[in-house]
Length: 251
Ligand code: C5P
Image (tube, rainbow, N blue to C red):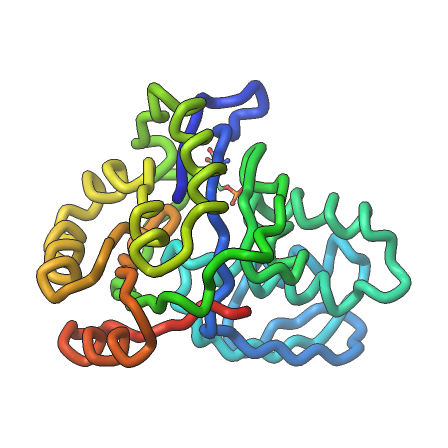
């Protein structure tokens, strides 16, 4: 569900990707302050979001989402900061700031549970009917992160991008159950992530060997995820794979 097309004139790649919010979240507390200070975790995207908003705050950030993991944790924090200022701000201005912060930030600003991301991942189509209650996930984070820019630099764009983009757009509307969701799983960044981190291949094989319906690298990695039928199965599988956590789609 992450298809990478040719590089655009602005240096970003064309994308067709599926965003799904899950029940894994960081905690952010914001208080008025003379200047921005982020306590708990030096998250540059939160600081940058407050700078672009022109709203200095003292921030207490409690991280639960692994950082540099390909799970969108930094983008989720930045999106949450923008959402905190949604009242009284122009929506277009907030989306412009979100795009400046990163390609994934508009999704986290939107508050949508499921969306297709087109353009560079910033143009969203809501998917209200996605079968979120019909599957669960197992996440296997790594101790060491991967740089998104490094993974894109090592990636080969899909030579049949238009075709696989069309398949994804149709597929998200026809998936009805966990098998249908598993059939959508594909990541054009995965070969690059595996070149940079070959040991992720073992994690993919372990999830599939233990019964996951599909498994792939999440985003630019290094987190690997597996699709299973329900939460109980996710918990069972996660208890057998070191470091793994169960997760459920929101919505
Ligand atoms: O948008 P964001 O800042 O998250 O992107 C980080 C890096 O990932 C970019 O600098 C670029 O190298 C790569 N990227 C890309 N095409 C996209 C999104 C990200 O090449 N659509």
